[in-house]
Length: 121
Image: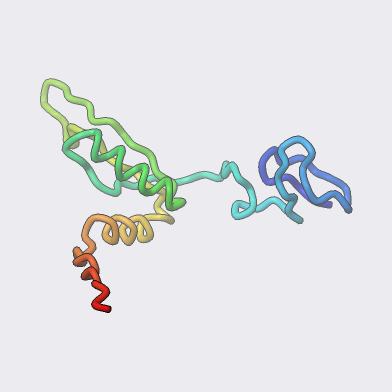
């Protein structure tokens, strides 16, 4: 048997592509082969941000790199908020990878552009 990783339909042997979704079938559905992960997640705080734009930017960076994350908007009340702009939460299993991606993107040493070479012929 084969399964569609998108709609999770089951197909008999010999079919290799889902006729409805046009996805290549997989031999079994696992969290790694399913497109829509429905397993339980434990979200942990990655970092708080002073404004929602920064939080959204980090969320998009994680999303592009396959890190499960969400943005929790800051609530400003009578006594203020512990994260007025927002906070990014990540799945605890992705926390170390999220930290590596964040560090590589925001704390990478700037490199000088290569010097232009001129043709002296």
